[in-house]
Length: 404
Ligand code: DCT
Ligand code: MG
Image (cartoon, rainbow, N blue to C red):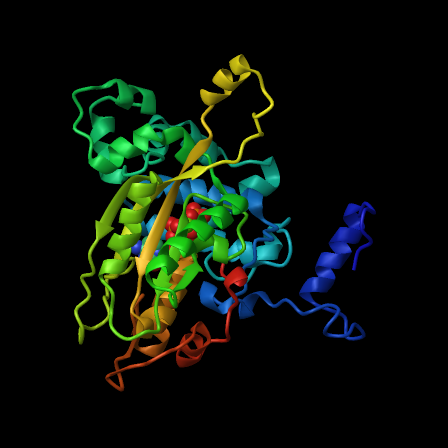
């Protein structure tokens, strides 16, 4: 449509946006797809949401509001803002006037007020208040530590603590093994994982798993499967088409990494899956797979020092040449792999909406293990994500379109 690099004056931009909403009859459908606000689904699993977000200034604001409500354990308001953020992420144009959101679902009064303020003032006073709020700032810091959630943050806040440094300095606090690791590797863990680091860890995981189970399938899931260039951790799904389940695989992999000095932290959760059990109804419930929340030591290649003099070598020996990286490993039975892949690919909001759609629109129960049809009283088998979407009567949504 527009020539690259050519500035678009506001009048032309206005004209283009008008066209996008009601395309003139002489423009072929393919060139200018019609956008009809009332046809946009309230479920993100019926929308395509790529990483190309035209409404970042609004969605960032909503995510701050949602997070603040999460810290206050007010789930309804939190979800209202997450749904609104997710909807604006899926729009094929930037919102510039209130008219642009007319007829769209998920736009409640609180949401509209903030959009209006951002359009008119450039920023929202309510969001600014949250960002300056003492409680929000403290919770934001505390929850950035691996192993610290809202409950622990609440406790520390009530004790008068406000910063990560203050928590670190308080030697009377009883920290969990996870939180101790969280503080020990804090700087590395808050700095995001890059795609290059994810690829390097992927090789380490594949090598270790295939040492013990050569035909195992190792798939990177989470944000990286959705095409993100950074993440807070790296998620892997491991399965094997061979006969029998190998409970030992995860333990063997972890032991190997221990011997290689690559394991900085690990918490193995044994499988709690009971066959014949109905899918879990609890929204956002943890699944029952055997899994491991780990911190790996990723050695970073450094410049060759073989030609350096002795003092330079000593100096370089003190430079840390590794980075602590959060890795989740999930082991799934082969028959449940497609469901696990769909759940662990996310996004969280996409998963929530898939489950809500299944339950409200199809009388089905979806979780990371299975799909249950309550009317037919049967479990629906699936060998691929495509088959799950088909069971639900949904058009297939590619992983990179699930960034809701
Ligand atoms: N998930 C799940 N069950 C859990 C935890 C997570 O089904 N108990 C899903 C939801 C998203 C996906 O797994 C990955 O989770 P995260 O790593 O938290 O999210 P992400 O999208 O990978 O984001 P990030 O880039 O921050 O890691
Ligand atoms: Mg992740």
